[in-house]
View (cartoon, rainbow, N blue to C red):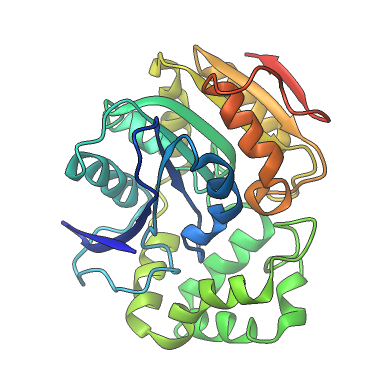
Length: 290
């Protein structure tokens, strides 16, 4: 695991290396880069995959106490990550986290050559759905995050709709989830960082302005959405694809929000096809232009 000193603190990341096209993969709240383990296993043979662990609760090193970890602050941190590694023309891929809209609206998308948006926060769905609202309530209460994530040590709690039950069709392996949650179980500073993000959502009008800014992203874009998503409305995927001038939509069957967990092979296949590394669309999914 490599590490990079950025303005907010140290960000750890995986770098598969190699001379292939650069793909940067981003995860959501209370996760780390292992969300992408199965997709990276497919892509790494002929792509350079970089997977940073964002300061969204699954990170192991606390950020500086004065770090801006609002939605916009984390988006700026992603831009800083790309700049620090001097990456240009990257394919930026994200799941669950909706920071692409903030990156574009803030004018920090110059290093992005192609964009892949999979089921994620969009429009005014911040925090997203039932689990997002539950997390926001916990973050607003003293000791709320410690209690909420402490309950997730009990494995049956992980499949409730208000926690992670609606995020995947099939349970995420317990060992993987233990790794995601352990920093929140053990560090009050990590809980502080997550609280900043969850409570750092701008007003609805600003969120909608961010989404509208995608009309200015004039490079290739793929929107891959879970057809059975209960947290990120499938209609949001269609609307995002329509906003993007070169947007293309694919709906992935038999999956909920965390497509890299439910359908990693199909998602990797769509990314490959989008990047010109394969000639056919994976079977079982519908693809349309914007």
